Image 1 (cartoon, rainbow, N blue to C red):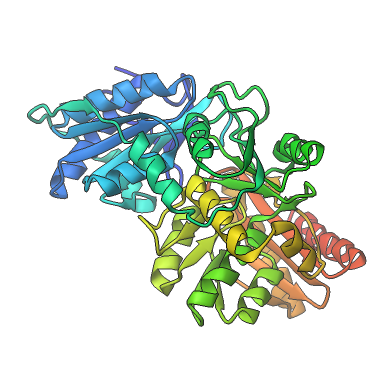
Image 2: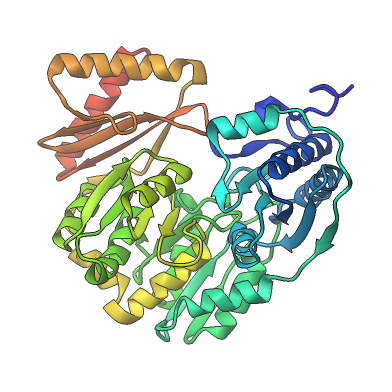
Length: 453
């Protein structure tokens, strides 16, 4: 009997939107195989039979993919193995080939010793209660299914390139961070006009250059230096599995995801006046005001890429995104978060509307923190938030409770919410002046101290 019982998936792997854990400690081949059997049972019960499987560039991914495919075949479904590449390529395979589901073996932006799985049933993500139920379910033996390797990379790349018909001949720096986009990216830029410089392009699961998460400013330092030293027009970075994007402009300044969403939204709203644009609660007031000025309707959503996508579909929004770098277009392919696709749309928008640098310079000046990640035990998150909320209610504060507490004052706003993926609270502060930023930051920290954090 294994450490999580016979034929069981370790329940500690379950997160809000996927499965994740430290390989060899939380996650083993046994878990991957057991997951395959459970997913197969759920797929068959849902009337499906054909499933795509892909994997990222982590050292442990081939081993986990092999075990997962074995479990799926034991469970009686037919597997189409798309091989190593970004998560977007797995999504593309499910959509393009009309498959009944898909599983991506990936640790996304997590450290190198971690890995996990993202699940689709049809083209919809499996998350929350449905994910917990699938992992906990029993799996009965079935007539063995098949497994074959298929080639989708060339079709995927061709589709990406068609997303940027107006891409201008610009000088672009790229940093895939040694993640799973590296090989695909090299083929894409060879087909694009302009001059392209790739750093950290070799797929290497040890991530020797930097952590594969472009939402963290220090992970963009190399790209910023490349843009400045070579005088490039912009730089684009991806996370470990290619579903998060990071961008710097022609002077090497970070284009934060909410700013990038506004850049894209201005063009989208020119075609779809009055449409909604969905952003998460960590987004700048500048985005909401800019969407309104462009004739659109800004909608705040709880953070989490699955929740952002759901809000986009519910609102009929053509565009959505969050501060972590997940951005969605509803009017193309499969309405999911493929950062390579977003990069193509950024280049096309630059070709039609002009440079990111000029766009950045025209934005109202604000003073903001990046996302602050504050250690807090999972068991304490609700207590701390409740204590802060009680204090704010006593003060008569203006609070948006879409996701946590977003507090607006004459200085600007601050946000405090529980992370859905880590034992942390996350916060962000934005103000109209440096002095206002310090006042708001002090107010937030005082409330946290009073709550015992």
